Amino acid sequence: MKEPLESLILDLKKSPSFLWADEIWFMGVWKNSPKSRSIAQTMPELQPNYHSVKQNLELEDIYGSPYAIFEYLPDALVSKEKDLTDLHTNLKRLGKKLILDFVPNHIAIDSPLVDSNPDLFLIASESVSLKNSFLHQNGNVYVHGRDPYFDGWTDTIQWDFSNPNVEKKHIEILKSIAKQSDGVRCDMAMLLLPDVFEKTHGKKSSYDWSRVIQSVRKEYPDFKFYAEAYWEMEDRLLNLGFDASYDKSMYDAFKNQNFNFISQNLRQNSGLKKIRFLENHDEERAKHQFGDNSHAYFSLLCAAECILLFHAGQEVGSTQKIPVQMIHTDDEETDLSSKEFYDRAFVVTAKRQANSLVFWPDYKEYNGRSVFVKSIETEKVTELFLWNEQTAEVSGWISFQEGIQFKPSLTDIVTGNTYPQTKSEKGIYFKLAPNQVQWFIF
Image 1: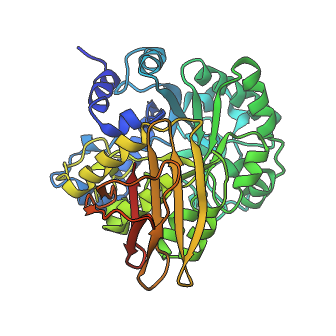
Image 2: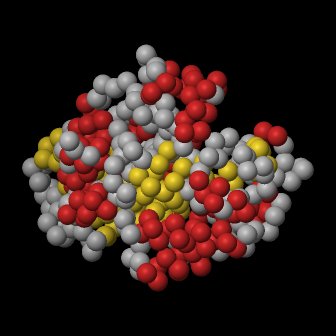
Image 3: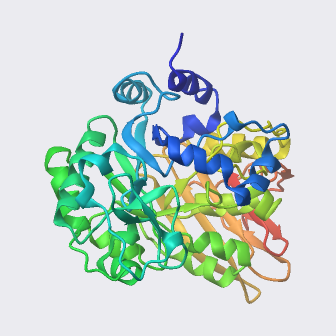
């Protein structure tokens, strides 16, 4: 009988997104908390979300939050082995890297770590409200894990970053993760910054991300640290040693149709330091949020210099946001237009190389209106991106040059439409409606 994750890899290998991806991030592999499961199954405010994705809901469909980790050991649903070494090895054979979650701010309220290390967790002061604290079986009243803007997550307990031994414990946990993976996605990494912790809990923090990262890399020099981060704290975390950080600003700009912001960011060469996305487990599905524009916006992210985070189900146009506490939901019908688009896109981007030559990374003026024009050249393929950020139609000619040569017809990767070309010394003719994106290959 196959291990659950082995079966998952077999399914993933059939997906174009798996072939395209360099790194695979599996969410929810760590041992799940029985208490988190009980809370998730009984919280009234969560029930409508469950019923929206599972018509005949049963308690077994609700497993608890993967971000209330009981122990950093594989969950029984994931693997019967004591670690994820076999999974790591199998992915490495396929040319993929394994990324796992590290949740630095908190752990499950019933974690055995609380019993063995009671002093590493934050004792509630008199000013902490009852809804943000709880009485542990060891007799201490602890604070729930939280951020400064919301009440605590009731299935979690807050690490006490004023205690220097927490940093040592985290290094120990991270080294154990590094033995069986290539990197970690650090959940809500900015909550550990000293000023954020003090704002949230009123205590001075002694925690230093740079020390933690350096300590792990002494033994595992290639181990990756990715930061989930918000509130414009991304650069601070990069300066502390993170390899890359979430950049939600482009998502928000697409959502708010802030085209000026999008154009400014497309002009910048940020390197592979920004992690951008059209959806993730915290956001609405891209197809639901952006509709048919989701294909155009994904194409613009493919034209940007960034790490692209792709969410399972995005490639088939799923519209239902799945609560993280659930392990069983009803299946959605595949959106054929989304599947066909992502099939086309992955075939092209999978051929890119790290040393791809990029030229035309800027805008061109046509009758006083700017059009985003960018080309990415790999060994055998040249990609050409066009985007009209204007509110009026724009047309013009792209002159021939290296990599951009005459073809009798061009197929737009965004829509799948084919455009016959008339040979002209002027080059390639284009006509773009407002906010239209086109993506061609030569």
